[in-house]
Image (cartoon, rainbow, N blue to C red; front, side, top):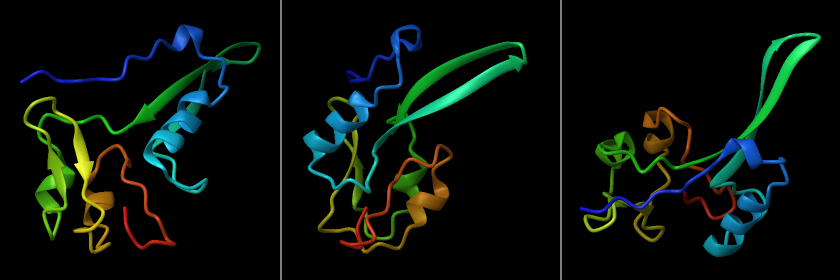
Length: 115
């Protein structure tokens, strides 16, 4: 299986959130759903502080915890490319995947009552 991934080089990130907006556009999600998020981290103690940004999203884990706990098997991992997706029509909004994901990736859509 070929694993598709998102390459991110924090050296060039200026925290513009274009990756997040592009993700929202490509996935047709509303403003409140952030499947990709830019997190700002600080390292050091004043006055020697470094700031860096990190673009984070689903890690498409090798053995995703979210899949194991999904009540309706609405989350699948593509066997050809390793991408983890949620079938919105099958999702019953039990939010077990949200609790199981160690990265906090699944995003709840409170309006649609889906992930």
